[in-house]
Length: 260
Image 1 (cartoon, helix red, strand yellow):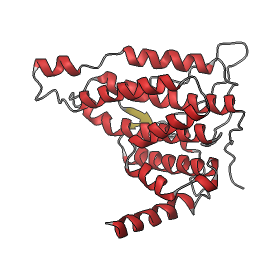
Image 2 (tube, helix red, strand yellow):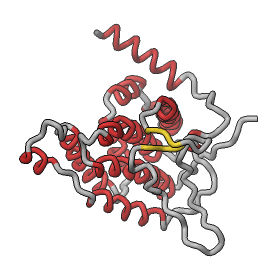
Image 3 (cartoon, one colour):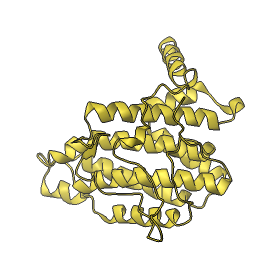
């Protein structure tokens, strides 16, 4: 078992740590469906980070085609996004404290990503850690809803595990509040901005993976639609929070530049 774990760690190290150079496509990853631009035109209001266009389980390719979120194209894009976020985490962590085993565990057990991001933010004294605690509780409710397929659930099951729209609205309120304090975003950014911000970006990428997994379950009618909306909005919240953490810590975010 130890030898197998060691091989996994070495393989992971080869992917995440030893190959940070970008070998991506010529278009930035978030060009497929989500652009995260917040600069307003003229004196108009700043556009919201969340668009709600993916609430029904579909997203857009760079060509404008709408496909299910679990489509192999989005799976490839999302996994590469996770890799980029992991690289950003490595870059933002102090080398003497970085453990490849930690990286391995975080990849195998995604729930640790969120918890560790919360711990990093707590170390920095951020006031939003209470929100992260609440989100973890809501994610338990998300799991309960997914674990209760409507095709086999009794009324008592559905009543106990029903997922409402209130958590979605709460996330949107938090996003709007942080966005109002952030400078306009006019470029694609890379996962960066210090350890707290980089960890939140990893959590965001994992959240997008969860959304891709849940989308077909919701479309089949086996889970509440608000579960998908919550995960969709949560990734926007984590993106915004990552920027906010970098701002409060005085760290610079890395901007995407097309390699020459």
